[in-house]
Image (cartoon, rainbow, N blue to C red):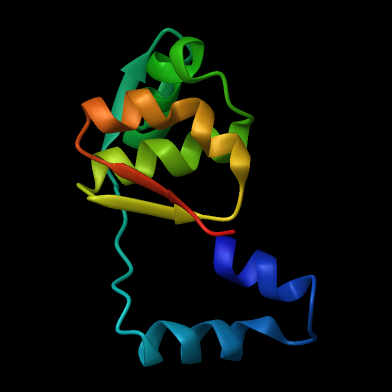
Length: 103
């Protein structure tokens, strides 16, 4: 979704281009279908995790979801051009995820 969102700000019909990029760079697309109970009610596992870490990482909602997915999917690296992710660098490091900022 993030890739399509980014491409949509720069071109028309971004979906075929996103698929092309995913295939070209052999990117795997995975999901986390598990539903969890939380103080906010029934949520997906990623939202449940995001609610638990929000106070510590202090990121905007979509960035918080990116961090949650990175941890839950077992990513070793989060590559971004968004400096806001540096706020979560210590947290991610403890989770085994390295933040690499593109400049």
